[in-house]
Image (cartoon, rainbow over all chains, first blue to last red; front, top):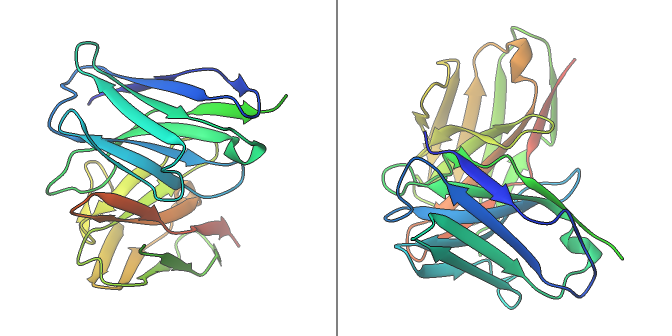
Length: 119
Length: 109
């Protein structure tokens, strides 16, 4: 197994930028797909974006203008920045691994970081 | 953008009964369809990938079928721990884009 540990602030103010980091333990961060996924309280899952091959990125079109995902191979971490926050961004934010073929699905998830956007 | 629709929204069943959950895609996703189980306070757990392949450690009572736009998750005989919310997810191959269905809650009748 490759545990994922997300970290970041639990409370962020409206209009500010959220920064979260996911640390990958016990395996390489290269050659697979890493994602951020969020879940507002009591609601379903929303994919935010992929980073893969240590630098290629694809975002959910609905969030693309506000999202930046990056990777640091030297520390085995990947990160999420989400700008111009509103209350609608309040959610549990998960980091997850998609190993690529033949799985093409999220087989490992972090425990999630609850983020509340409030003044 | 591919939209996934799940039905029913809620399924009320008793332990030992068979559960049949549906996921429909707005356009073909080939076989790139996965199913997840989520319990309160936990991250989702991968059950099925590539439409019909069980993930590591998933009991044989869980099975998936379908291709193209119509998919089914079947739980052959519900155990008490199976009452949860189930999501389907599609992932396009290139560029990689993912969407989730709205979920089906399986609760105890």
